[in-house]
Image 1 (tube, rainbow, N blue to C red):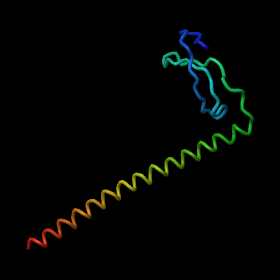
Image 2 (image 1 turned 180 degrees about the vertical axis):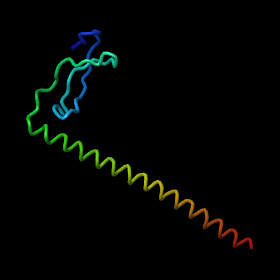
Image 3 (image 1 turned 120 degrees about the horizontal axis):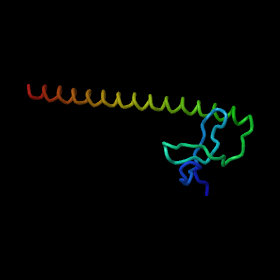
Image 4 (image 1 turned 90 degrees about the horizontal axis):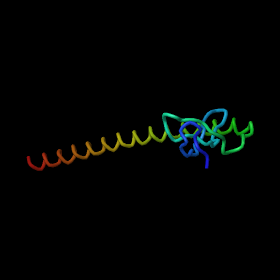
Length: 98
């Protein structure tokens, strides 16, 4: 069990997403006011990993942004469809009443 040198709290395993250590896990203090790095859980990564992982993360972020845009467009089109159907129903009812 690893403890924080400053506050003696039990450390939690966190993940680094820096370009130098992408995806590498480390022990860190759980308290935000302390937020200290203690030690690495994983061994140092090979240089190729330091190139591949950030590229994959950028690709994932692009795909997630595209998914969000598509979902927003879908929601907008769904609203247009509902408004169109309401107008059609109102139009048909108006014609039937006249």
